Length: 307
Image 1 (tube, rainbow, N blue to C red):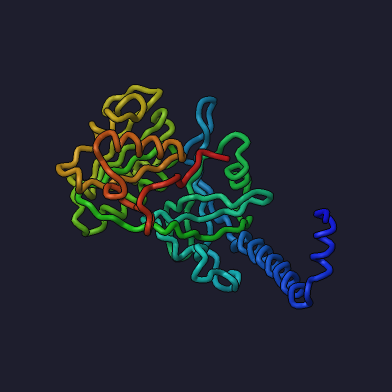
Image 2: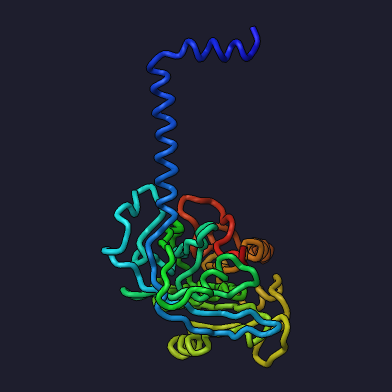
């Protein structure tokens, strides 16, 4: 019997219960797609302020801080989160644990950004605008008063305290790294030293100088800020790119077992940093500041350069 004949025979022999089962299955898939489509819409989020931190130049991309109004319950969707979903209200985003906000870009996927400031009424995103960037370009074109869909996303990380905390930031990754440093400094969990290494091309690409200085003055013995510049030589700044020698020079814990690290950059940068730390004798997840829950190893990254 040919395969076509077998198919016709099979169809002819379907019982009403089997036919009903197929119908229910199709309906379930359709309902799931509708739910996912609604999920990706997020909540209408209004832009209320825009501040430029780094002006665009021939050899420099602009950096802006966008301040959004946190959606109120009156404007939020009623079908927010089930216990299985990672989608969370903006007020529940835990910056110090690496939670992110997803900005829903029309005609594209929701893009992850780290909040760099949050109050009960508003939150800040600081982003670099990349040439032809679909996400950063769209957000850069928003005018004050415009709305965009957004929602919080739980990253399911846990805090792993240690006496020494090392934070490695590549470029705009400082937007996540500095809030983590600030949170660590404020904690009373036995941490005695927080060292933040920020890799930039030039000093003109850096920002938040006042915020960094404030932390240095508030925690003179506990906080250390180290800059490394790849395209400029400047006093009190390291020169070059991050490598195992640089990491060994900057991060010098008294006890390696008590060291905790987090890196922020593209997935490739973070992967390379992990490999460098492994070369220096550190192990994962023991030496991770924010390991994922119920996971043995650190995988992937958080913030990509741009799509």
